[in-house]
Length: 161
Ligand SMILES: O=c1ccn([C@H]2C[C@H](O)[C@@H](COP(=O)(O)OP(=O)(O)OP(=O)(O)O)O2)c(=O)[nH]1
Image (tube, protein in one colour):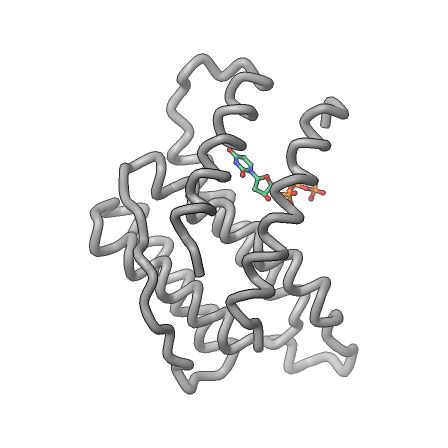
């Protein structure tokens, strides 16, 4: 997957949002860390993987993918905030349950929040890609879904969202 291209798209979107919301260079690292964790929670809710008390089925593949790429947006954006860029490498399916992998991602989010260094960033990104693999997403469809949501984010800003 071409992460370089996605970082550039994210940079443009972040700048557009910053201007549109008149942030004036305001520091939003804390907000983006929380936003990422909220997105991961929303994603877990769509899969319902942890709801051992319920028989209601999970949402469909595409709805879950849409939610997944919101997290990709915030992870790219956090990398741009701190000047880190994840470079492509092979992602191995971790052979963990969805629930176990969600917990790994949350752990990686809090580690990065507490110590926002390159190594923690790489681990955060890798754990999120592994989550994608556990959820059954192919790299190509993640990229396509990212591009689609990136466009939607511009439209939402234009609509005064
Ligand atoms: O600086 C930013 C801020 C936001 N986003 C993107 C990430 C994500 O794709 C979207 C926010 O998520 P969502 O669309 O779920 O927004 P929401 O406000 O949580 O939506 P809703 O009110 O529909 O739940 O905006 C960025 O890329 N950069």
